[in-house]
Length: 133
Image (cartoon, rainbow, N blue to C red):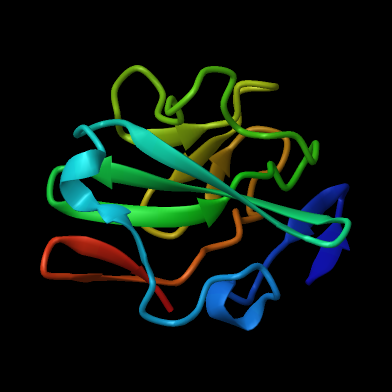
């Protein structure tokens, strides 16, 4: 990871199973059906003093997972539980300053952290369940 113009540029996806947070590879986070289309489900894990806040966003049959930290301000993206998409449902949005991120890869395409990325969390979907990688 590196900082550029006050924004965190993230290049490596996060593997939850590699953290000391009590989850292992293959553990089920939730079922895809537990997340309404167009909304997200948040998860928070602690390891000592470290807190790992992530979210899984659903759009249709697809799900995407990210660390819930804006690369510009270091704040959570959402202001309301499970609400990460802007009005059209096309982009993830930081509610602190309106930065827009591509859903597919977390790349910021508009706002003060343009060109930076959200940190992707690696997940698998198997038999309708979202699993830890």
